[in-house]
Image (cartoon, rainbow, N blue to C red; front, side, top):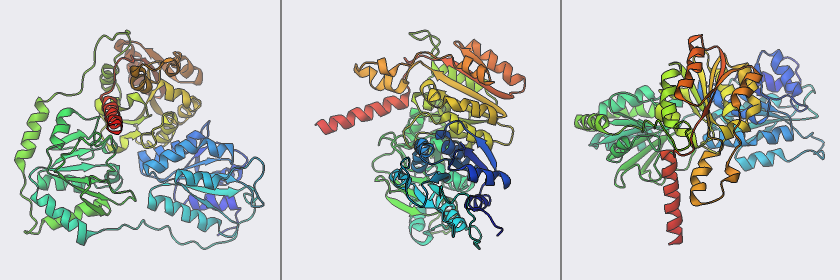
Length: 556
């Protein structure tokens, strides 16, 4: 290798894994960013360090390609912690390159960044002059293999010093454990005997590229299929029930509850997916296949640690054995088709509301008809989180980026939209859905999105409140004063930053958005949609009922 600084060596190794960086420049990472630019890495500046990791995280969720965030030490680093925690909880491989205290010892302004990261579940790899390259490579391989966020720390006094020459091995392919002779054989036998099989796919199945194998397996078994919100439409086809959990229809949930054998592929079975314990029948047999390191769900009867794609292919081979051959239960699919056609769909919304503001359900339906067909949707956390997966056509799993759900946070939407916008390269329009509370948290990065996106629509569900808290706690009689937000003219703010925009008080006001789309959908359009707080999302009602039941059980 040629002579490089420590920062340059870090950038050089990273350049063999990724092309995009997001962050804010400061004393601790200025030499790293200088080296990254010379190496041709694309740096997208964000305006708050909290956006650095969130953007890199969303870039991966959208494209499947690794990206890095970067901050300075101290306050720059601590500003990024919420997004770092979300990436860890959501099992997203992402790299944070940050400055750190000098090797001579902490200064008065330094904090123990390694301990802070450990508290979030993120490993820190601190580079040295002798091993800057190998430590960087170790960090990246760890992130990819373990599917998690890592921190690469560059001590302040080493950043500009010359690094030692190193001979590094080629990047490793992630090792996969495949328990074909044990758990998969048992899984094949259970599925072959099933009368009402169901295959439930999660994001792990999507990331493994297992859609074709799981779809073939479903057709071989005559199984019904479903997906988590993060694997939306991965298994679309005959027998597809849609989203499992609170974003799905009651008819679909009823069918899932009648399955006798359930194959869970790359899904963690969160409380939301499981409808707080009510999705699957108590006597159903549950098989879970996942390569991720995660605790086994108590509902799972058979767990197989394996790559989902290779596991599905192996099960198909095992079903070729006459002893394990499955009889296709076609009646199960026919019954499902009939019940789905006759059962109620999602509520279409109301034309009138108590406060005269828009019903978010009718707004969501109208937006689906207006937004470009080729769309990638980024969604912040909040009360409105279900409207997109419930009412919008989202053709592929990678076209729905739901952030904040793993760590139960809001405010990462704008930052995530920046990363997704950089990852979208095929003419799709980036659509951000956010509440007014979360949007205000990340408002500084509206300017970043306007600069990064070639075509973006921002939909703000503006109810002048923290809506989830209004429904959860205002309904209990607690004071709503801290839950209210003075109504902000987001349209005016957007125009000041260079976007086109409109306030949407009626469905007819969407004509401004339609005109922008018809004119080519270039740049960024912000739709400030004034919605009512009187409509409670069904998923939130489920959550509230489950919480009340849990409290009653403890009290009893």
